[in-house]
Length: 416
Image (cartoon, rainbow, N blue to C red):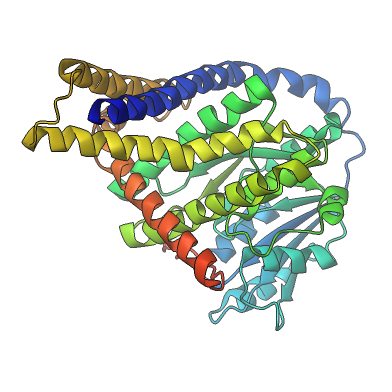
C-alpha cells in the first residue's frame, strides 16, 4: 500500500512540475514576442476611449497618496480618464487624503461606501464604484499600486485591438522586493507567476486569469455579469471564469506594468495568502458543481488546473513527504527506495531550473543573491505554502458546514 500511495504522490508532483516547465517555455516565447504587435496596434489608437479607474481603499492612508500621484502621472488624456477612490469604511485619513488630492485634480473622485455596503470587502466596494463610473472601460488598481506612465494606455490598446478580449491584464512587480527575506521570496514567486501561469497559459491556450490589480475590462461585460461576486474572496479568479463563459478571452499583455507593495511580515503574508487560497477553493467548488450549467465547457481545463494546484498537487507533496520521513524511522518496505531519492533530487533540480530561467526574463533579477535564495526557497517558503493551503481548506470547509459569514481580511500596508 505504501508503494502505491508513494507512486501516486510522485505522479501528481511530476505532472505539475512538467506542466510548469511547459508553461515556462510558453512564457519565455511570449516574452520575446508580445511587443511585436505594438507598432501595428498604435495605428488604431487615434480616438482614445474613456476609462474609469476604480481604487477600493479601506484604511489605506499609508499608501493612497503615492498611488494617486502615480495616477496623476499616467500618460493618458485626463479629459478621458476618471479615477474613482472608493473610501470603504476607513477609520484613518484615507478619505481626507484622497479628497485633498481630488480638489486639485478634477479627474479624481472620491466616494464613501454607506451601510449596508460599507466595510464588506473588495467586491462590494468595486460594485459601489461601478455605479458611478462612466468610462467605456473599467480598470482596477489596488490602493498600494503605482502603475507606470503608459500602463492604462497599454491596457486600453489591448482592448481596442482585440475585440475577442473581454479583459486585458498587465504585469505587476514588487516595489519593496529588497525589504526583507520574505519580500525577496514573494518577488521571485511573483515573477514566476507572471511568466509561467500567465504568459505560458496565454501563449499555449489563449487563457489568463484576471489579477486583483492592473487590469482593464469592458464595462458592458461587467454590467452584463452583474458586477463582482460579493461572496468571493478571490473576486478576480471568480470574475475570470464568468468572462470566459460569455465567450471572451483574457489577454496577458505585460507591456502594462504596475508596482505594488507586498507583505513584509509573515503574519500579514499568512493572512493574505490564506484569503487567496480560500478564495480559489471557493471558485473551484462553485464552478465545478455548476459545470453543466456553464456555456463554455473549455473552462473545465482551467478549473481542473486550479483543482490540481490547490488539491491534488499539494496532497501529493504532503503524502510523499509523510511517507519519505516515516520510512526513515519505520520500515515501510518501499521497493523504490533509491528511486525515491533520485526522483526527489531531480524534482528539486527541475524546480530551481524553472525559477532560474524565469528570473532571467527580468534583467535585474538574476543576481547572486537571488541565486542562493532560490536554493533556500524550496525548503522554506514553498513548504509553508503547503501548510497554508491545508489551513485554508480547513477554514473554508468549516465555513461551509456551519454556514459562517465570509469575512474579508484587508492586507496591512507598510511605510516605505
